[in-house]
Length: 627
Ligand code: F6R
Image (cartoon, rainbow, N blue to C red; front, side, top):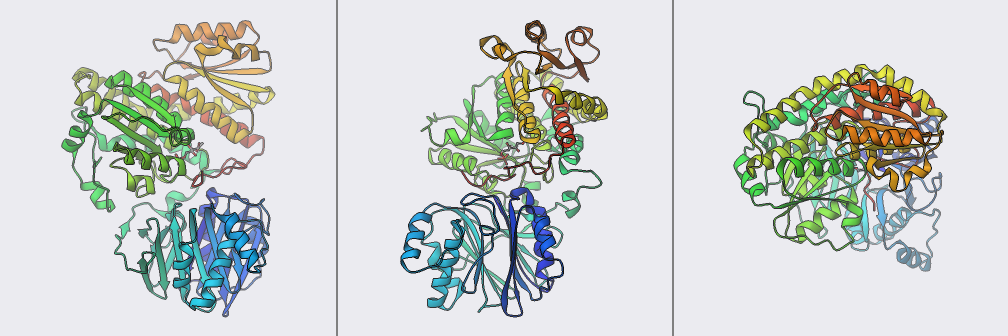
């Protein structure tokens, strides 16, 4: 995590860096800092806390020049403090770092033995010392970096400048992302394109152990031996406006409200709306997309069919909200395509020596496409010879680039740390994938295909309807304030939605919530129930409805206070519940998309009325590029 921005060019580096860091604050927000090469000398300012503290601190400060680096931190080694904030600076070298240096203890001891004065508790400062030592010997920043790269173990992306080479910016990575933005006589090196989108749409995505050397107007990418590497320039079609709040109070709220559009964009490539048939488009098994144009023109349905025909099991791997989407995917794929699905948390999968049988399709889900554990999982699956498929939101992210096949959430940039539209778009994609596998494997009749597609096509307008009920969710959120704990429950495909609802409340409102399969209540959680425990029950009118209502009666009989989310007018649910929230009637496969929206909105309203920072919850960051 951590966000980094480097700039060389004619604009004032301070302005470019601060604007870029604002876009990257989602990656970490416990301290921030910048260094500008001002009148031939490194001028550094750092501040504990959010970026606004740094902005406050530099009011009235003059920064000239054309070169600078900046950082917003998510602490790994060393508490959040000014002393541990980046950039770290040693003898005219300034660096910013995202990631973890695993051999830092060893490096620290070596440096101390050589008499280095270490002033922070971070692993990052050690890199500044190593580069400073080497530039004295090599008299060249690139050469120094080449040597230091060989000494580091871990996951890192690093930018360095040296005051003796005032036209140079050198960056390298092994793990966390780094992207080079190419402007007109200016260059940006950033953790995420969002930080430079207002300046350029042209990017080079660095691969591991590549080094970028910016020398004035010239940009070269080299390998650790200094050999030139020819890289593809990718032209993006995201606009800078898409990453603005556009009048909403929070990114999260904007992203919740963007869901009708996001869902429509997710399904659009895969559905022929005239024939109501599924045709997964541009999966590109075996071909990593090189640029956006290629992504849009690649027609490979036949190749996708051939690959999917050969699979007999799907293994879904992800973290957090993406993992819960994967759990819903299990219900879709097993029920529609009739092949077994296993779902695993990436950090568990990668260390439990998984058995991957031939014919298993390993599918990862990641909004950012950079989550370290998910990336490690896909690499492990590839090493075992499995065919891999990724569902990502960020095109050209590391996971996207490394997978054999590619599906996209197409949600547009998601900035709020709590994932919302990426979750619902993923549910839609998983639904389409299940239909495609079902069709290819002849377990889906054409009548069923049409019924499912009709349900999908109705979804964006149904989501609009739920969003229009927001005032009821706001009132419900207010009533949640009096409870000490929350049990989110559902059965069948509503169970992963309950898990997701509980996660949203935990991460935004800092309240203890648990997601449970409603049928499990009597195996333990019933003991928790009293009048201070809220039960938030997903009770759609599906084939499990009667059983869900029985579970509700059991909870009510023990004093539990019930908030139920059901379909249309429902007198029975109204009678059992303290509060009944109605959502439109939908097909079993699309109901999860609709029913998660009240849960997102209730968590949002409760957290914001408690005064919490909804877009940047404490201790979290959006892109988890460390283990
Ligand atoms: C929760 C949330 C996280 C992410 C998780 C995986 O709201 O956003 O749980 O879902 O960190 O992130 P990605 O999907 O980027 O791999």
